Amino acid sequence: LASDVIWLMIGSFILGKALQVTGLAEKMTYFVVNRARNIAGLCGVLTMIIQILAFFIPSTSGRAAVVLPVFQAISKEIGSRRITKALAILMPTVILVSTSSTIIGAGSHLIALDMLKEFNNKDITFVKWLIWGFPFGVIMSFISCRVILFLFLDKEEVKTKLKQKKVEFELSRNEKYTISILLGMVVFWLTESLHGLEIATVTIIGVFLLTLPKLGVMQWKESLKGVSWNLILFVGAAIALGKSLMESGAAQWIMQKLFLVTELINKQSIFIVLLVIVILSVTSHLYI
Image (cartoon, rainbow, N blue to C red):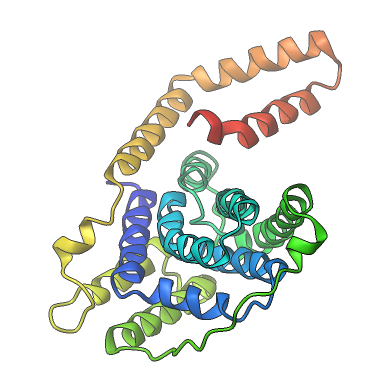
């Protein structure tokens, strides 16, 4: 609990719970999806929505929980097995790819940031990560979208027309309150260099405002149900393990051995090490 990363994750999970409890995330998703005229447009809109959700819901399973009802409703309405299959592959793919767009997109980001700050006294702000990660996340998400459409649907299916329904977008008091808190948090995240409040501090303040008696949108006990405590424990253990490896010198020993082995294989050892790291990072979702 001494790490800011843990508090940031807890706050982010509660924030995601608020979006689900108020129905705001699902309502906004339905409202935007209804603007799509064909399957190609629908997939593009879903890709964009999942990108936006990555800014507020840190858990990939949490983002999946938000878009699942939308997927079920769309699949039932379209009634095409091939299109349903394409959507079933598209949504989890974009959920995973979009994690790089924002600093709270995945727990692994927060572990890396904690290690960087602890041992190199360097930090990456919300804005810096946004500048580096958002373009990559957006581009790769839409490339993934196009590839899935190309592989699983023919030209006629991609152009399949969708029925336009009139969807009212009236916000309740709780939804308006949640939006105002979210916008305030984003402003403070983007201006961290001006006021000095870290992203974790801003997130926790926002969470308290969302759970205030009478004024908030949910009770504190209810908000804690949205926290993935298994993931919190995993991240805490990973941080403790990382610190132990660094302080004991084991991490340096592993790196020396790794560089030694790669030098025997190829003189360009740094390239091979980076290649191994990239492969592990890309495939990590298969075994973690």
